[in-house]
Length: 408
Ligand SMILES: *Cc1c(COP(=O)(O)O)cnc(C)c1O
Image (cartoon, rainbow, N blue to C red):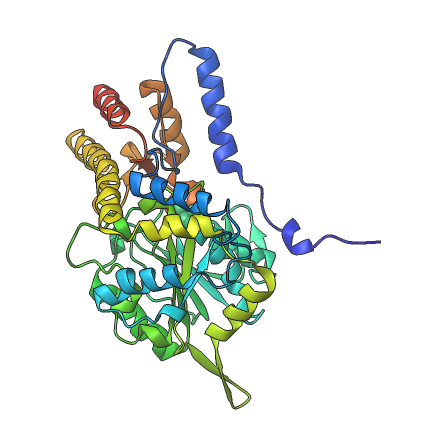
């Protein structure tokens, strides 16, 4: 008789967004005349920019004739996009990354979940707390996290690195040495960025202890401050200890189109029985075996993001969301809240007032203001007493939400 993969059975249900949905429905039924404003939204809302739309149309038309039709894409991505990314995202910022170190894919979520496959089964992972849930759950599925304790919400074989206001939401080095360290900056959910110095410290630490850093840079386009690195490869020594994840979802609105990249330098290598193994070749093998490449049409759309026209239009798109973020951040500050994030990120992270739990504050905000956000405790135990609002809604809704919150 077949058996399921029992590692999957260890995963607790994902109650966060279903519980939010139930509470919102109950409120709407009880208050049918009240308009709810959703600032919990984690998806973009603006349409694709004109440069991307034009590239999509052109690429579609190419498929109509035999001489420009494209079948299977190269597993690792078209050269034109690997080159555009290496040149614009890395070499233009002084990062030493070659075209062939960029692997094109259909998402940073899937890459962040799949990347663990190229590491030993008994690798120990370290994650920030609170955290984007995919990093932990994908390692649970691989049988790497031990047992879950429902009371504390922690896995027995995972190293948690608390990120709270006390450490500026950038983790301290763990006491136990990890093999794989997941870092995401600017961060979802806290909205925090990491300074160049602190990230350099992590690179030095990883090189010293022989760990690898998986650096999720999905929000780099939102960075506005000078001293914040856009890539971990801006740090010296990162080529021997880091993998970076890039996505077109948040900077260009490709959440529906699907496009991303993983960068693995050739220098990321480790000795196995006297032979040096490049992690680059393992990921290339993984892609070659399990993946048939992101669609040509979508990769052409991705390349359009690097034209002068595309760059200008994306900048405007990000600025629109950041205008919301600034409005939400300033409004909450004026209302007396302790507020974080919102400067280099579309997420605003607030401390709940009067020591309310994250869920108490969720109910309070829904009841008193008709505003929906996301309880911080849903992202990990150290998210308790915090709450996330996002800037992905409309400006009008952001203004009205803040207006209502101020009036409570
Ligand atoms: C949105 C997001 C991504 C992007 O995922 P895609 O699969 O590329 O859409 C990656 N990491 C984090 C932390 C995110 O919030």
